[in-house]
Length: 203
Image (cartoon, rainbow, N blue to C red):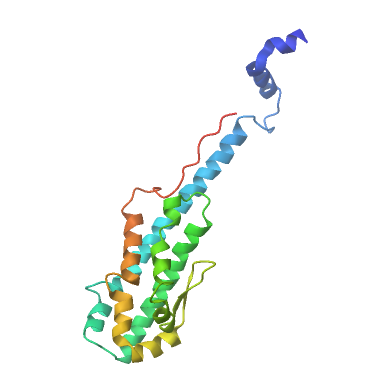
């Protein structure tokens, strides 16, 4: 008994490790492995959000103030070719938005600030203009936060409400403008800003 107690905690761990086979478990290796895995996942999620933000920014170019769609809206264009362009651009934008939303919703490491990135967009699509957005074929799923886009509704709404369509998509206080702010918020911050960094664990 005296021999065991005199070794102490540190000595006992050294004794245990020295008498464990090469392929056996290491006392200190396991927490480090878990922590490295957590960091890698957090870093991967951060990189995915940055990538999604860049894709979001790129998909918004068609709707920017100096973009093709904005010029066509300003000129009151009602051509079928413009409708196709607007429909396809909006469909692409919705797909990118949903990818961005799913990253923020599924992440274990995103901060409270990060999880609120899309709040203003979601509030807009459930606010006073919700009826017009739905008629235009754009609707938000309240459970998942994802967008749903109906291109047939969009075409019908655009035929009868060209001016309203332009306002909802391009006006500075509406949908596209808010998404531009979201993309800029992510791309303008240091990498990993919206994610919690897993802390070291000592045993």
